[in-house]
Every structure is written in structure tokens, then in C-alpha cells.
Amino acid sequence: MQEVFALIENNKREFTKLELFDYMQDRSIAASKRLSFAPCMTHFIMSVGDLNKYDFRESQPLNKLQHIINEHAKEDEEHWRWFVTDIEKLNCNPIQNFSKTLKSIWSEETKITRQISYLVAGYTLTAEPIIKIAAIEALEAVGNVFFCASSQVASELQKTTRQDYLYFGESHLKLETGHTVGTPEAEGFLAEIELTDSQRQQAFEIIEKIFQIFTEWTYELLAYAQKNGVESIKDDGFKADLIICA
Image 1 (cartoon, rainbow, N blue to C red):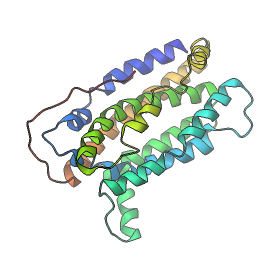
Image 2: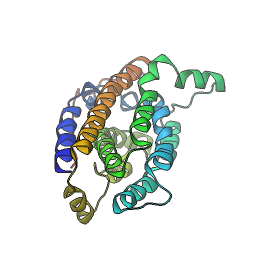
Image 3: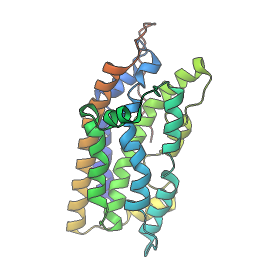
Image 4: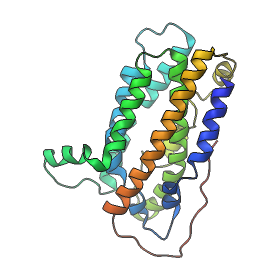
């Protein structure tokens, strides 16, 4: 799996350089606007629970790899609840009828968001555990970069709103380490696995596809924030350096 981890790290380094993360660090823009893309994320975030329950998890795990996946999925599947509470705290919960909400979630400006869960499900539903691990590791790496940035914005917001942001804030970042498993023993177990040529090809393909679609997603989120967000404010024009978490 060492070559898989190396490919993910290379993609992760490139992912941190994307324009969305510059935008999220720009303190000349109101912190609330820098997270105003939150509604655009809805379809994927709410689908993550289902991906964990029905794609990644197996009711009767037959090997250690699937046990690792099941433990990860169990921990990850309820994070959408934090997202819902943060939507309310960010005042992204406008009063509108159900049909308008549906049109918004399934609109053209959120089409990449919807494609993410379909792509991940397509690659992992019937995949063997080692391929699922590769997909989850790529997803965790993307999440780690995103939450490193969002937690800084949430920290700024907390100083003025006096509210904790469970999804976008520090508490979620602590769980999104960038890896499927958090213990050295389990990480060592994964690192020592030797892939077949076929497994390596499948793993590389899904990793590249995940980073590709998430890269496209960052531009969709940025466009959404710039179009739908609250008005920006000017302060000292300070722009923080993005802290890349290990």
C-alpha cells in the first residue's frame, strides 16, 4: 500500500493549492461569506452517511481489512448531523417551501456535488476491501485539507457569534486525521500490504478520480459562495497561511 499512500500524498499537496482555500483564508472577506458555500455541499454531506452504511460497511466482515473499514464507517456515518446544526448557525437556513429546496439541491450550480457520491458509490459498492480502503484514504485526505481551512474560519466566527461549529470547526478536524485508521499498529498493517497489479491499477484509478472530482467541486463551492454569500467586509487585508495537517 506504500505506493497508494504516496500517490494520495502527492495529490493532497496539489489539492491544498486550489483557489478555494486561498479564498477561505482571505480575512478581507467576512468569515461568514467564506463559509457561505455550505448549502451547496448538502447533497454530498447528507449522502456520506449512506456511503458508510451501504457501500463501505459489510454486515459480516470476513477479514481484518473489512473490520477496519467497518470501524471507520461506524464513526463517520453520523457527521451529517453536525452539518445540519452548522447550517442553522450560519444562517443558511432560509424559509422556503420544499419544492424550492429540492430545486436548489438538484440545480445546475450544485451538479458536481451530486456527482461525488455517485462516483464513489460506483467504484466501491462491489469493490474488495483493499480498494475501498484506497478510496476512503483519498476521501480522508481531501477532508483533512478542507477541515484544516474551515476550522480556521470557524474559529474566527466563534469569536463574534459565541457559537461552536461542530462540522466546520476544530472538533471535526480532530477526527479527520487524513487516514482511515488512527493507530500506528493498524497503519503499519495497511502499509505492509502488497497489492497485485490489478489492485494497484484499480486503487490508482479511484484515487485520481476522487481528487479530480473534488478539485472540480472546489470551483463549484467557490462560485456558489461568490454568488450567494453575504457581503464581504474589509479589515486589515490579512491572509493567513493554510496549515497543512498531518
